Length: 223
Image 1: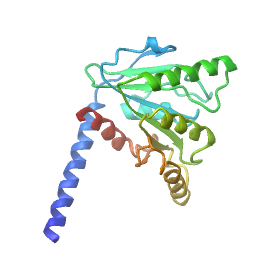
Image 2: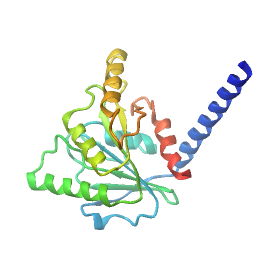
Image 3: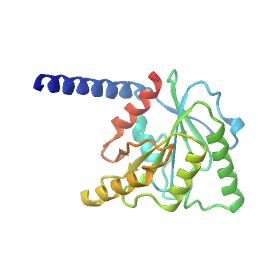
Image 4: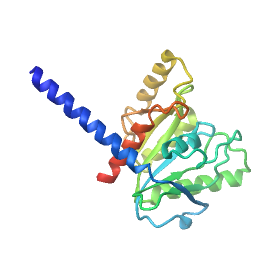
């Protein structure tokens, strides 16, 4: 029995190392900003796997994309909430995955017609993009899920779009507060049909969780 346990542990460790390496290689390519899309018709051809990142303004979405790709200034970061107002597309030559940065929600300082146009664009994208494999919904680890986050989850559940929660800025709260946020988030997604059950904990500042996120995305390439 002890031998079996050692064998299982070794196999799990090897599989984890292989996943980490696949993720590292995938994002070793130099990703570039391709274009910003204000209409679904502006999107590139659906010729590769897409993963999209969504979240409240100031959740750290741009910083996470920069950390994911290893590019310091790939995605623009700003102290002005709601700066991302398009579907921003990032690609690397020959990379089998495309990154889509979705407009932030919750604090967008813009006229109501502009916000309505963004919402229409997002909904059209989610419902009509067959090569979209997963939406990563970012939530600030200091605050946990808010009403706007729940609204986005409802939309994703209704549209049957697979999504996974990423808790950002986990280096900011205390360990006790972080554990409470994780427990609360797990409770929120427990019965949601389109939610992936595992939560990814990240910090763009320290690099925690970035390797796991890369490996998770790389898994889609082999499916």
